[in-house]
Image 1 (tube, rainbow, N blue to C red):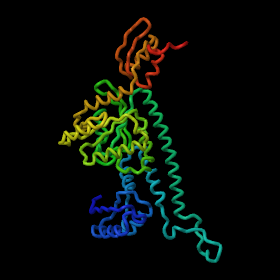
Image 2 (image 1 turned 120 degrees about the vertical axis):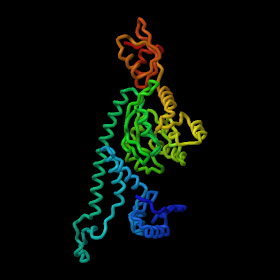
Image 3 (image 1 turned 45 degrees about the horizontal axis):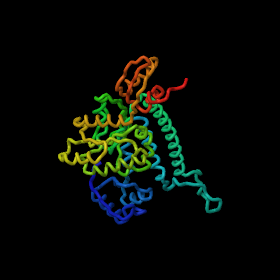
Image 4 (image 1 turned 90 degrees about the horizontal axis):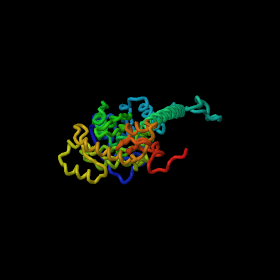
Length: 390
């Protein structure tokens, strides 16, 4: 679409009939006529009544914020899961906006003389449409429930790998997919446009310092993201909920960087993951001339660094932060493992960080940092713990 005019309205509170007020609605009609516009987009959520009244006044189609976001989502969805979530959100948006018109509102007539020739098919078209939409919503919810179960199985398999699960979060177009490509060598589609990533992408990343993580790219957040959209896309956001820690990618070159960070934190709070460990990356450092501002942002933020995911500058700082946070999640185990449990020693080397392994007559004396999933397996052989009873 080509923008032909913009209109900014300040009101102490939204008008219940037109949202922007009847006078501003008349002004919008004049602007539509002058510019020959064919659509009006309102940067806020409208009630069905407000939307209908604005359409009557402006004589063109009116699209609110949620509808516009859903339209973009529909273009971005590639997988069957993404398409299911988009369709569900669209139908939930449409349901309260269904309205019968004219002869479609036929109904059963009364028994008196006044009811002559008023007998209709018994169910209005509006009621039929609503019933069909509700039925489709029910079907979509069941299908998405199956998707969630399948994802739970996948996540359980990932947990058995004993490798930290990390989710990339951030405002839309902050550079999450570019960072995933940099770290994993993947070829995920990365564009500077809204919600370029709708479907989650997961890759294993082996960092240069020997640390391994499972890294997931997720849908970008946006300011004033409607609550019902967060609910509709909860299956996609399960990656964030199940992650061991998060990497918050921030577009440091954006003029509203603070507002974007606040918007992301708000969504994370809504998902109930605000207490998870977070690494903050101030991305796109190659676009910023004021390096002092970058350093200020990093110094004021815990576990933060700045880098350019496009050029790779600053990657070493990020990898050291990932190693630091992953180590904080790991437990130091000092144990003597019997020789017949060599499988546990192999797991320590494969999934943990072995400090030393010495061969003694009673077994292998191993000191290693292990993940919370692996550490309990070696606790029975720990030097500090009491001997297990047969």
